[in-house]
Image 1 (cartoon, rainbow, N blue to C red):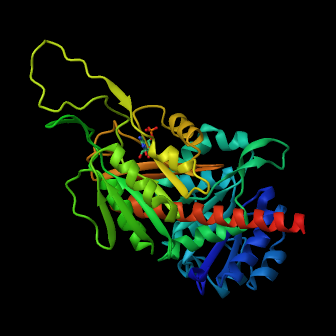
Image 2 (spheres, protein in one colour):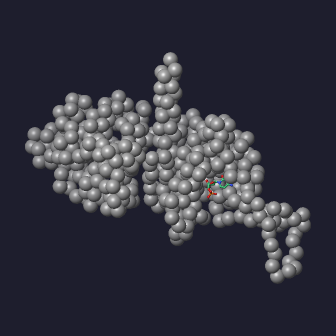
Image 3 (cartoon, protein in one colour):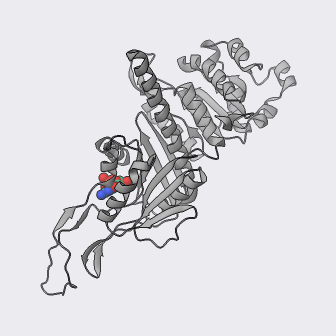
Length: 415
Ligand code: C5P
C-alpha cells in the first residue's frame, strides 16, 4: 500500500470496546509507511491507555485541548493542519453526533473542525444504537458534508448481540485510507462495463427503449481508466462520444449486449452493469412497418436475458456490480436485487427526483455490499463515478484478500 508512504494520518480514537483494535491499526498504518499521530477522547482512555498508542505510534498521544505541555510541542491547530487525512476509529455514536453538530468541546472534535484534510470515520457501536434514527440522521449529515463512512461490518458484537455495528478490521481501514491517495486503485485490472439503453425492435422503424442517456456508465468508464484499469465499454445507442483509452463496442439490443458481454467476461476482473437493459422485447419483429388499423394494438413481449445475473452466476465470476434504478423503497429493492442476483455490490438510485438520475448530469447513489453500505451524495456524474470506482476498488481488494486468506487456511488445513 505504497499510497500511504510518508502520509500523515491523524488517528482519532473514541470510547468503545473496539478501541482495542486501534493499537493494531496504528501498527498497520505505520507498516504501510504512514506517519501516525493519535488523539483520544476521554472515553477512549477508559478502554486503552494513551501509553500503548504512544509506544506504537512513536509519538506523544494527545487527549486534551488545554494541555500546556502538549500544546507547546504542537498546538492543536498545527496538528489539524499537519494531517493529510483524519481517521476516527472507532467512531462512537456520541462522537458521530458531536461531529454532526460541529461541537468543539474536546480535542478530537476541535481537530475535526480545524482541519481541511479528508475525514474518515469507522463507526462501532451496539446494533440498536447504529440503527437508531438519531445516529442515521447524523450519518446522513456527515455523508452530505463529504465525510467517508467506512463500514460498519455486520456480525457478533461484544455485547452479545448480532447485527451491524462492528468496526471494520484494521487492514480494511488502512485500505480505505490508502484509497484516498491512490491514483491507480484498479491498476492492471480488466474492467467490462455496460452503458446506455437497449432498443428492442417492433418493426423496421419502431422500437421499445428507455430514457437512459449512458452518461453514468460512460463516466464510470472514464473513472476506471483514471484508476489504471483497461476498460471495455459495451454501449447501447447514446449521443455520447466514446471516451479516450476505452475499447467501445456498440450494440442495439439486449441480445446483442448479452452476446458481447458473454464473449468478453472471461477475461474481465470486474463487471459493472450500468446499462438500462430492456427487460422485455417484442415476441416477433414485423418484417414491414406496421400500419395503423384497429383502435387498439396488442404487442406480445418476452423476457430478455438477464446479463448481470448470468455473469454473477459464472464460476469463477468477476467482481460484479449492478445498478438499481428505483422509484420507491430504495434500500429494500436494492438489497433484494443484490441477494437475488448474487452481486458483490449494488449501486442504487432514485430516478424520480428532479435534476438527478436518467438524462441528468448529476446523481446520488447508495452502495450496498455484504455487511455494509455507503451513501454517495448528489454530485456531478463525473465525480460520482470516481467515488464509485474508489469504493468498488476497496471492496474488490477486500474480497481478494478474503479469498487469498481462505485459500491459505484451506492449504493449512489440508497440509
Ligand atoms: O433487476 P433489474 O433489471 O432491475 O436490475 C438492474 C441491473 O441489472 C442493472 O445493473 C442492469 O444493467 C442489469 N440488467 C442486465 N440485463 C438485463 C436487465 C438488467 O444486465 N436484462
